Each structure stands twice: as C-alpha cells, then as structure tokens.
Image (cartoon, rainbow, N blue to C red; front, side, top):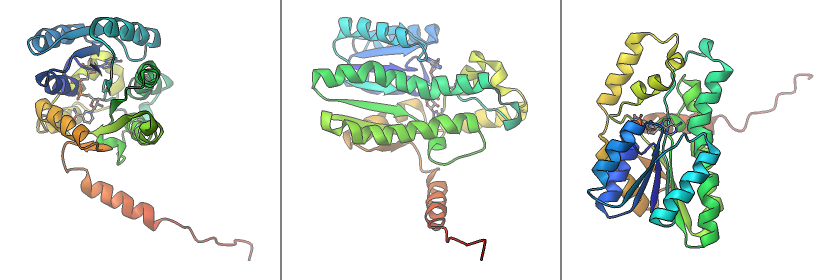
Length: 265
Ligand SMILES: NC(=O)c1ccc[n+]([C@@H]2O[C@H](COP(=O)([O-])OP(=O)(O)OC[C@H]3O[C@@H](n4cnc5c(N)ncnc54)[C@H](O)[C@@H]3O)[C@@H](O)[C@H]2O)c1
C-alpha cells in the first residue's frame, strides 16, 4: 500500500495514477481538500483509495493518518514524501517566518513522513520503498536559497537513508525533477502570498511558463515506477540538469585539496 503526500494533484497525483493503474492501494494526503476529493474520486475507479487531509508539518496528524489508512487498507510499504512548495524570495526579503515555512514543509515534512512510517516498516520486517521528492535544485544551486536549502537537504537525507536502510530491505530513491507542468507556483501563493514579496510579476510569469513547458505528471509517474524498478538512487525527469551537475562536480574536484600557504613566512 502506498502513502503519498501532496497526492491531490501535480507530481503526487501522477505517481498515484501510475501506481493505481498497477492495482496498488493508495492513501493520498494533502492540505488541499478539494484536490484530494477530485483525486480520490478519479483514482477509486482504478483501485482502493483513502484520502486524508494532512499538513505534513503536523506530527500528530501524521500518526493519526497512518493509523487510519493502515486500519483501512493495510500496512504502508511504499512511502512517497512528495508534498512541497516553491517559495521564491529575494535574499533581502527573507524572514524567520519564511525559513520556518519553507523548511517546515519541504524538509521537516519529509522527516515527519519518515519518522511516522519507518519504525512501522522496520518493525514489520517486510521491507519497503521510500521515494522522497527533491528537485534538480537539490543537485545544483540557484539563488533561491529558501528552496535550494531544503531540496539539497532532502537529497543528502535520501542518500544517507539509503545506506542506513539497506539492512532492513527498505530501498530509497530521491526524485529530482526538472520542470514539470504543475500549478505549484499558484498553489504556493495560495499557502502564503508573502513568500513572493519583492519578486516581479514578470519573473513569476516566466517561471510559470517554464514549468508549463515541462514534462507532464503522468510521464513523471511512469519515470518514478521505472526508477524504482531499477532501484535508482536518483530519479531524473529530464536531462536539463546534466551540464550544471557536470560543472559543479568539475569545480568541486578541482577545488581540493587547497595548498596550505604559510602567511607568516
Ligand atoms: N513542478 C516542478 O517543476 C517541480 C520541479 C522540481 C521539484 N518539484 C517538487 O515536486 C513536489 C510536488 O510538486 P508539484 O509540482 O507536483 O506541485 P503541486 O502544487 O502540483 O503539488 C504539491 C501538492 O502538495 C500539497 N502541499 C503543499 N504544502 C503541503 C503541506 N504542508 N502538507 C501537505 N500537502 C501540502 C499541495 O496542496 C499540492 O497538492 C514538490 O516537492 C516540489 O518541490 C516540482
């Protein structure tokens, strides 16, 4: 049985459809209850589905959701920590509140999913699979520090987790999408318009157009299944990040070791 955060729409819905087509039972969790209802109605034509309103920052809510869906659909052995927002903030507009919101959803939300379900998976001893959604922005930095910080952390977390969980038969992949055609910018503005303070409307329109030109959610769902079958640590949705990753690795390797200069001599 699969538990998918942010499963009401976008990439989470694409993953849910791909699993549902294969008869996997689904639990979808999201803060957007209208999207959850739509997704639940659609997917119930494919498989057994439960929908749970949940803010991934809510630890007690996570535990209750886990109890509920496991009682109704059976043990969760496929966990997709996918819910996320894309705050776009100039560095001069950063506040503690924005940091807390961005990292609370994009990083602690993933930690909360793991902390809810991993003890149950390990206790059962039947293995499982965890897919965390990061981003190409978790592999190569741009100037959006609020987003990049959380996504780099999710990549590092996933790489470490894969090493830690191998002995329990639990696989880990990290999905690092390039542009995907979703409403994430509009959805993030709904969460908190202030996250975009100081960002010109034209920049947001350009970003929305960039995503519109991206991969569709159903293609991403199939890529996730293929990546899981191949047990890939990283799952990409396009090749766009390759030149930047290559440049980063070249710079990284060229920068070590630093020759020690004795300033006193
Ligand atoms: N769309 C892209 O181009 C792209 C690229 C790279 C990474 N990603 C990542 O993919 C993931 C999914 O994004 P998407 O593009 O499908 O966006 P989306 O807005 O279509 O879907 C995200 C879902 O997460 C939900 N959500 C937001 N905050 C939540 C919270 N606190 N608790 C529970 N649910 C919450 C939203 O309601 C929404 O249904 C995110 O982690 C995002 O950072 C997206």
